[in-house]
Image 1 (cartoon, rainbow, N blue to C red):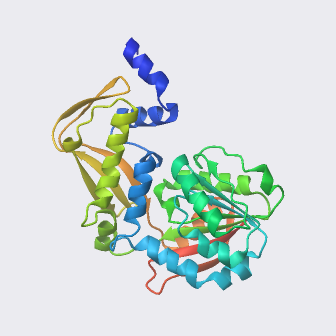
Image 2: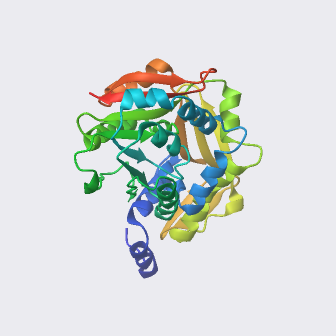
Length: 319
């Protein structure tokens, strides 16, 4: 395809990975975009607001598990490990783990650099004797860990059931990549959301205050700002759907009317009712979660869940 000079200038000034993923996703049928691009600074702030919503049970349930089982983690993990947190965000849950296991270093990884450095500075202040070594990057792509952690034994920390945002084959690939990155003798503490009542699940992704809707719609604003898009904000609505066959919540941006718009010099069309699938959040039964971990090169060793079975923290060892 021949681009105009203006389009060529746009293409040269934007994040090539962001441009590729959005343009490719909008060119598909059905349209779909990767959830990692939610997390510019505004998206990260909105997600933190989501975690405080009354409908959004995962964060408070997982946080309670981390606070309650510190002694269990210490016994199972041991002291002196470098904690590598994938998708650290604000690291709000992390202090519970760090206080419990007395790590030798903490390496938070996140794609939102500004947000990561702010949260890392706060954590370094709270734990003055702990080396905090932030890494800005996408954990779905190859990464290098700081040389300062050298040959320290490592504990991967992957809270929030972020693994559920991936298709099962991609989740297995990521777990294998984590296994390679963390090395022999590593352990992984991972959050997994459980299958539960449909209405409770949908409410968690379509809250009464509309914060999750704003989080989803922020992707349009980011595309318009960073990729010279002209998607009409009032032309889309947030939708949260439970897909029982695939055991997942799906978030979509639904066209409210026929739309014509441009992104990074490319033209796109959507019919009324057509959607952009922006995120999936897979939910796992206990056996499903263990099978996923084994396929990814990890051997489940221990598991903690709340009294209602809403959410689980699973500790696995490098296989």
